[in-house]
Amino acid sequence: MMNSKRERSGLKLAMLLAIAVGTAAGQAGTAQAGGAQTNAPDAQAAQEQAGLVIENDSELPDAHPHDPYELRFRAHGNISTMHWRVRQGALPPGMKLEDDGRLHGRAEHSGEFQFTVSVTDGGRERAVQKGFVLHVTSALSLSWKAGAHVNGSRIEGSAEVVNTTRDSIDLTFVVYAVPSNGRAVAIGYQHFVLPPSPKTVELPFGESLPRGGYKVHVDAVGEVAAKKVIYREYLDAPGQLQVTAQ
Image 1 (tube, rainbow, N blue to C red):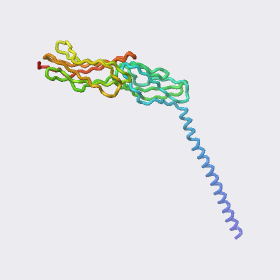
Image 2: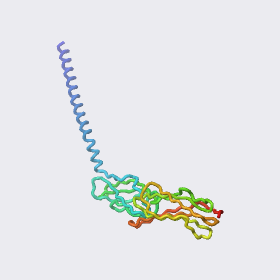
Image 3: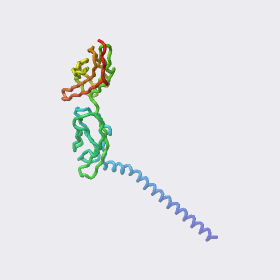
Image 4: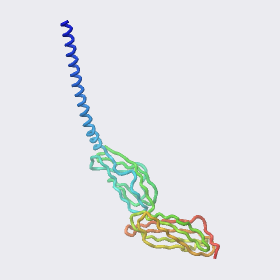
């Protein structure tokens, strides 16, 4: 019996020791896991700090044909010297990306231009790239309001224009009716300052003409003298208009 009690006491003591050891090990494991969780954000922050990130949005601010344009590409990554270049695609003709990240120039024509820009650190050890879209939109938006048409002996109609730039534009608006002999007749003319605004401005035209067939051409020329910039848009009425009344 004594031996049996001693055996049970020894077994109980061993179990208690095992539980104590397991608990201590578990607490140590928990402490280690907690330490890893605490350090994880720091490690992630360190990785981000060591990385190289281009900050500019993929959609760049719009440009206008022949209008001066300048934009600075930016990146962060704990480096002082960066080298920029176009990796794929093409910039609008008339524009250039400098090694220091300055995009500048005057776009030659409107359109949508997609290209990929890369930046490399000064030690040529790290490089990242990002795709961009640059829309070159017409500074003057010219469209038909009431298409050119014959009304008795008159050819008349109206166009509408919008100044999409940030500058006031000195606008000259002329409408020509061209007969078969090629001697154009002005049937509309306006000259005024068009302020920047998303609202359209209606420009009516009309004049009585001799009998015959006419092609109608609308011409809008805008100038920003301070920037030495000239914008031009035009419209052609489809087909030929026939004046039959006197």
